[in-house]
Length: 434
Image (cartoon, rainbow, N blue to C red; front, side, top):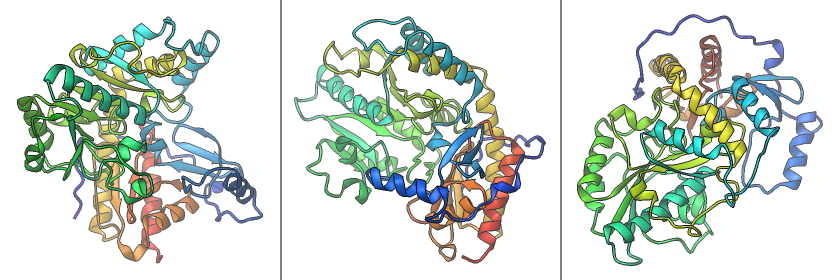
């Protein structure tokens, strides 16, 4: 039975038929093809820390990509939510081009004329006071860990070198040495020790276990409101509310990693809003850079981020003029509410279609919010990776996680007819024998 959480029930409106030329469907890459040669060249000269699908994208627009052989495919992954506003969004491209003609980098040794506005506008969007800009999501998480510890020592009065942070099992906060120290993924941890101490892991969605883990040395709870890498796992109703109560009562910071779930992905600006929760710290990234440049940020109060002093943390590229210009346009776009509404409305369509596939026995279950879903595929169809490769041949881009689960995260600009077309391809692939 499906466990999808619908973000809205507004019926989807009709849109024009998608442009799906005959070149959409393609055969697998062979060694002698242009794609095969390009893949082989990449494999020969790059470290094998990823296992990408055999497609070489040459151009993209909106929700559609075109590979080096001219095949068009519908992107239902959106760069793991980095492309919430689609490929080459005209507003974001214009903002980037305008800034490229002015100044792109000063380092934080100097002020620049986009920085103050970026910090003020992002703080306002989050209902916070202070912004610490970085580049990648992992950098934002590392920054939050350092800040939480320093806040624990300077403000809460935790004994030196005793600070602890509670995290949830199944988490994905990045792949730095500190972050994988509290990962439950064997691939993320194998051969990378010794690991950073100071973390307590509790089951995701279990508020009682989290409460039991809190001690006088706990400085923060770091959590994803919805766990993306784990298969778009939505916690039980009331869980985030209870976590907020527990952290507030215990004098512990609640750090919400909204790097994937934030910025309209779930039908709200932030996934925490579905339970009316405001954390002490937001971690943002991915979509904040509009799919153009890496931009991340830690957003909090002066009482929290004010513990840092010059020289204690930094980034040469963090908050650079180009990043600020693009992120400011992202903030403007979010301010209209258009993308939150599209995610909620089309998300209802997405989850409704997935419920139909579950009822038909084509998938085991699905779950998610807004335009974000984890889909569990029955073992008879093979692994999630095999389904992703079959969808690739049918003109759809997705990626698997944890064996038999595939993730769907279409760009928020996707047309309803295109979304339906992609889901039709999923149904066709699952209806055929493996």
